[in-house]
Image (cartoon, rainbow, N blue to C red):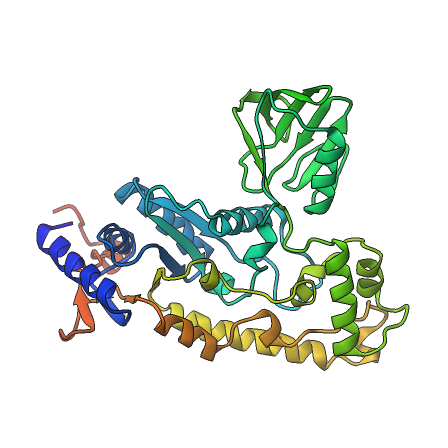
Length: 393
């Protein structure tokens, strides 16, 4: 990045820190946009930053570019569920593990360290999440030499969404074999094996989920919830009450209601997330005061997503008993209960320093338009398609 461009970004950072407003940053094509946003955060534009990507592919590329240009930054990612709105299936366990890890870190009061930037997608930001208080007292740190009873450890697993299996292969699973406890914590790259002698934890080792062989020693393992729905007694009671209040009396043809009432997990139960908690929050709530930047065309993606949510809700509501043809009953919640609408989206953005990115050059210059100075490189697509063209002259 040229010194002149750095000076312009420093002025923009100072301007945003003095007054929360929306600006457009032109001349920031993919790759260079990560450099510019990282520079704004380092220059003090806001105490933290939330960058909203168009999709998961863009989020991965943006994270890689940040790691290259600004390795000193702390980068967290928050992906969207990999299932459709009002689906019958649950989100992938690995994705939920990454989401929970980021939410738990953000909910923690420990804010010391390098500047923090959170990368998410439009789809993820439009969906409400469990409240921050869910993670209070639900983080357990284990170190070799520490003491903890196996009964207490298994109680933690039950209360935080872990599933007992014979062999641990997926995030959120645990297995107990005598004094050996295998588990796959939220946010971890590999599962961990705890070796106990009585109540004393003698060693912690990571292992390969495929061949179950140890891959190295660990100094610590941090356990967090592994599900966005924790079926404790209060959550079950609240679900039953709100489900009946919104949908009326239920019969034996509703397996979701029957399973949750019995404290059992049910495939797709996450799509009724508002019923388990007093209130839901958004990722904005986890990052008070943070600046926000939007990928080029992120606003258009947001509009399409809100329309898709409304269409999916209408389709579920319009299914007749005959069309269901023996499928389990599906009672959809209102879109506003689980998703952010356009008015709320715009209101949240207006409260914060907000940067809209564009890869193109600025057509004019005023107080709300800045030019980062970069331009997309020529693709040579036409020349490559011409067999007579010589590209290396």
